[in-house]
Length: 202
Ligand code: GLN
Image (cartoon, rainbow, N blue to C red; front, top):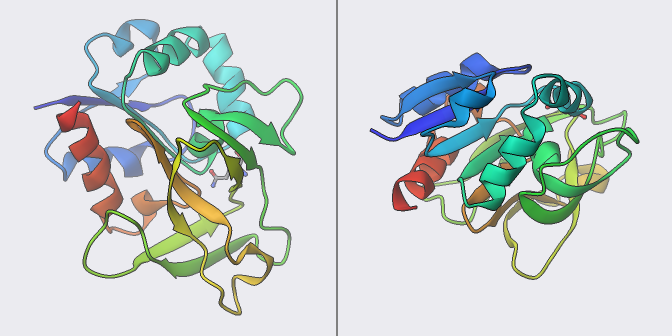
């Protein structure tokens, strides 16, 4: 079984661990640098990216994790995890660090006050059998991507989506995947399944 880490400094670690376990991988919570050894993939949970960034520094994980991802460690980030994986953040804190896993610019808390949290059915490229029920909680969206980043999902143009309509909310570059929403909270295992397939293939 491949070993998939879940960064366990902050955020919805348990939910990701449960979703991964259902995909027949061995899950390892990661808090210390030694726990990166022997990983086949890592998940960066949803939570608070500024706090996560600060804790990554405190636990001396920032640079080692960034290096592992640059060397090809498959990674998946949801929401705050997506923010961590971006090369650049808009509306972030000036001292917020990035893991540079996907060549993209994300806007933090992009959906604005009226739509702090909302739910949508999304068409997700590479995921079969019907739209994905996506939960957004103070979510970022992807402002722009470099040409070698695949866009996997955008917000459909519905009444609830408002100004978010058409915005990019799921992307992949090589073996790094990110979603602005939280599949770990809905019991729909298809995104985690996709990620563990990426892990197994690499
Ligand atoms: N707004 C949070 C941040 O900036 C992300 C929210 C989430 O992960 N649900 O990190």
